[in-house]
Image (tube, rainbow over all chains, first blue to last red; front, side, top):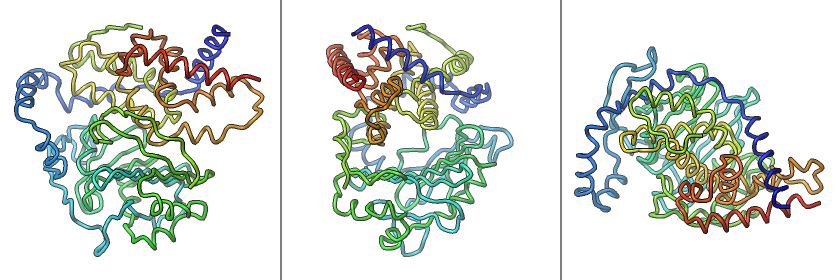
Amino acid sequence: MTTDIDSEIRSTLRRWAADVTVGEVDPADASLTRAFPPADRRHRAPLVGAAAAIVVAGGIVAALLARPGPTRVHTTGVAGTPGAGVTKSTVPDATKPSVPGTTLGQPAMIVLSGAPGWHLSYFLDVPGGPQLRYTEYHFTNAKGGYLQVSFYPPGTRGHQSLHPMAIEVRGVTGVLTQEGARRYRIDWTELGRTWEVDGSPFANPQALVSLVAHLRVVDRATWKASLPAAASPVAAAVTAHPHLEVSWSAGSPVTCSSPPVVAGGAAFASTTTTSPVAAGRRC
Amino acid sequence: MSKAMTVIGDTSFDALYRAHYGSMVRLATLLVDRQELAEELVQDAFARLYQHWSKVVSPLPYLRTCVVHASQDALRRRRLARRHQGRLVPGVVDPTEHLRDAIVALPARQRAVIVLRFYEDLTIDEIADSLKCRPGTVKSSLHRALSHLRKAIEP
């Protein structure tokens, strides 16, 4: 029995992996990583490591994370793209509201308005206090368009890109990365949160920026009214269950579950989850 | 597969990227289902590897560990497994598809253990290194996962 199930699992996984079609890797993708020369890192590493061990204390790190400082944007990425070949330092304005008089709520409440054909297909809200709360929206259209909008604590994204470039988005400077053919990701800080959009397929980054301009921060009543009928329980669920993870995807009911408990409390840094998520249930 | 590969220099990083990007995307896809998400996780893993290039002695195990951890975090956060579990249809005829659904429905750690054991062909100790847990934990996770899968494919 053991051997049977072993081989069955093995063959199932092999077939499954074979179904995954990975496009040819463009050598340029790898060479773009030279925006951060490893040789420099090799020379700096011992000093940086020693200094960090002495200087960095938990309180200082927490303070720095809570107050994002200047973001150095390396723009030695794709030739011919905006800002290529230039290194630019920017200080995104964390408090600038995109809509006067409106603030980013809990959860982050946005709508994609004035973009015909696009509709909400997925929503996720993970509680954890104002600094850790994570909200995610997926918008899709009939042409295969995909836009993911995620809200992270400030300063937690935008530093991990292989070849970041500066780009103007919603009146501030964001960090653009090309994730694949006609697929782009932009991070920026707005209303005290890190916004991240990941969209495909888009002819160029500006097409994504144009769509992102249609994202509006709204009040709870407007947000609730904007939800698709099937997702309408989301609004009540996030209020009734502020400590539960609430999610909805097109074709599925709204579900609630306990959020993951993460060591150190840094839910979206590279940490290890210490306990599994409790089973989801309708809510 | 080289278990302790040491590469030095930017060109070697490029070579590693070209050689293993596809296999890492396949591994991540088995762990999180969505190839789009898998590609993102693998890109982030390579970026992380690049940042620590000077300190990493064995890039491939390091990369695999990054991919597995990121996949587990993503899986737990998005609860993809649970959503797929909701789509299971009783009485599915094709036992292969049933098994695949059952793997998807496993908790994140059990699923990682199954994939690393039966797809990556890692030993218990290697899996423990990748998951940063004890070999005994791997064994118990494997045992529980196999029990679930046996029940799932029983007629």
